[in-house]
Length: 216
Image (cartoon, rainbow, N blue to C red; front, side):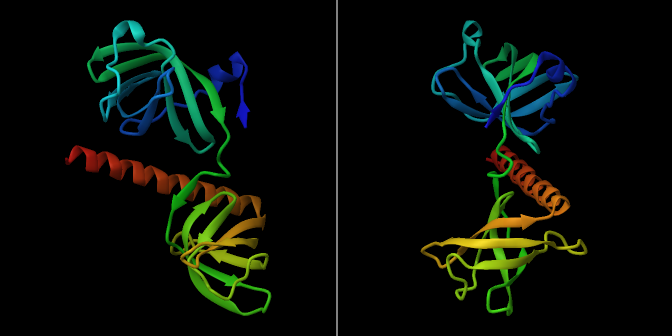
C-alpha cells in the first residue's frame, strides 16, 4: 500500500539513511543500482555506487532518479536535486519523500532463533525459526504440525529478553519439511519488538554486505 504525505508532513517527518547504510538508486527506466551512503551532512547525502550501472550516469540525465532505502516504517523513496560529483559518486540535496511503501508486515529477515510451539495435542516442542516477518515465520519443524493447525508460540529474540508470544496457524509446508506459520494473535508490544528485531537483522546484514564488498 502506498501512502502519500502532505508537504507539511514531509517537512517534519523526513527520514534519511545513515552513513554507510545500503541504498538503492532507482532510474526512470526501472533499473536498480546498489549504492551506499558515503557521507551525510544535514539533509544532504553523498552516495557512492557499489556496482556500475548498465548505462553510465551523465550530469544531464539525472532527473527522475530516486533514492530508496528501508526504514522501520517501510521502504522509503526520496527525490531531490542530484549532482554527479564523480563517475560513481552522487550528491543528493533538497530531498523529499516520493512515497512510502508500507511493507513492514512483509519484510523478512533470516534469523535462527529458539521457538517453543504448542499444537492442538497440547504438547510443547522446541524448534527454531528459519526466517521472520511481522506477519509470520518459517519454522524448521516439527513434522507433527499439520497445515491448518493452530499453535501457540514463544519466540526468543535475545538472551535475557522476555519471549514474543502469540497464536498462529500453519499455512503450508515446503519441500524441506519446514512449517510456515501466519500470526493470528500477537500483542502490540510484542509485535513492535519483533519488527525492531527484524530491521536490526537487516541492518546487520547490509553492513556485512558492505564490509564484504570493500574486502573484494
